[in-house]
Picture 1 (tube, one colour):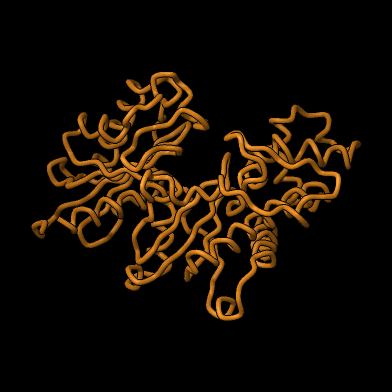
Picture 2 (cartoon, helix red, strand yellow; picture 1 turned 90 degrees about the vertical axis):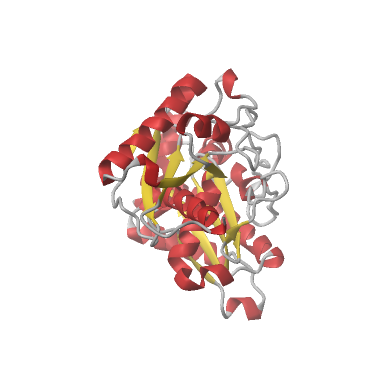
Length: 341
């Protein structure tokens, strides 16, 4: 068992543009209340990116005044796909397109630089773990949850009895690449959406920024040919859709309705194989105007099919502190590992 005292864990959330870090003490208190960001440099390859992760580690220790010798473990999360041990897979990885990332073990590389044990999770799992602990507190170890987090892609996480379900190869919880039924979701003349991963009609092909760019917006512009966004480059226009939806734009709301329906179908499937206590919704919609966020969450609930017994107890809610959830979840995972020794 680890000795009691002033030990801490550090959590680092690695992203396409920035790393965010935090420090968690042995009593379960986060010592940093705000974002602690530095450029991630992932598109410049492993050498610079690992140095950037080390810089993030140094930054959060400097912010808290904690000496490096008090750090028992570091939790690291990155966007997927990757193995359970942190071996990156280039195919489908938006952030890790540099050729030197192919089959690169980012966990081992950081561990060798720091000389401290590093625990790896993908970013969806880390955020899901944090949301689970915030919601269930002292009961986290006997509760279960599923999280769906929509951004550029569709991340997810499955927590059972307070622990991340990783699966044999680390791919459990990849809810975005789970095919979903689209009958009644798509319009009669709407093409079946395709995903960067090569599948058709998976959740990410609909409920993600990539899904808007690749599939939803091109279709809906054919239904609204005079729309202002028809005059904008499709990639830029896709990023503007949420703002239009917040202002009540009919076409934009149709796009987000399909995204909410897709998320509801993901939860409907999850209800049948994990039957969790809580379903978390995360992503840019959390940062949207409250009236739009509430409408989106209500639409997800409307399209989630439960048995009567599930409907009586299941909760669909928002991921808290989303910007910091990855780093904090990574620190929680590292602390759980320390306590298990």
